[in-house]
Picture: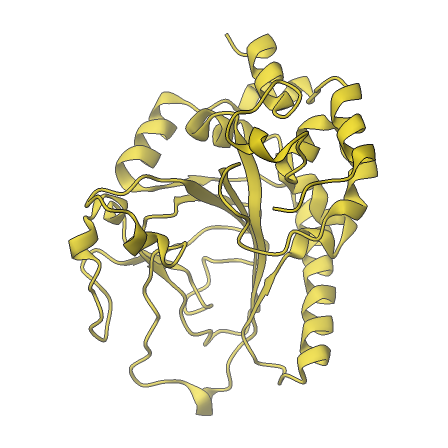
Length: 294
């Protein structure tokens, strides 16, 4: 993680951490905590109002078109565009979205950052290209982390919040598949590689505006889009600040628009060592929690 400029550091020190008090209405409920800890995922319906979904959907279309043009891709090509938060102004608002962010904090604590953002954009596939036995590509997130830990039971380290901009209730619309409770599988159980789906696999079926939390250890996979609906999902991944970001995080141009907590989430810090031993200046989120959560 590259150190930030002195001007950014002074901004982190100078401004008091604030978040809209309305966020306090969206604390993690006991039943939500139990759902997430036991099943590995949590759905928050109506997390984003339709007007904002429409705004974000238009932004997603612009990002996708630019990516298709730059890579010379066909209109039906599946896109996984990383580092999206810096590409469209409207995407910054989701970094600490009231309906979801406090739940992230109450799951992970305050020494966190946004380490990954992504647009999942899957247009319909022409019928002549449908696969008879599709390989969904089942996996756990964070790649080699799944083999680098020496223990059989792995720590969480990160989680993702997925914001659905399209209707995932439509059958065969590139639905995300998950295996509930698979975040508890041991390292020795990570050898699934057969065609078809592992036991317990299920599609995520939610309305536009829904948010899906999922533990990075949970097995999941994409699927083919045989519908007439383009699947659009914005992904915001949160990790502890000592983990290197998974995407480039080209976000310095956003700092002038950010408050101290948002800058923390965008990896600002007063010193390199503070990612491991943070002061209040490095994690203003900790100050806010101390003052507002009882």
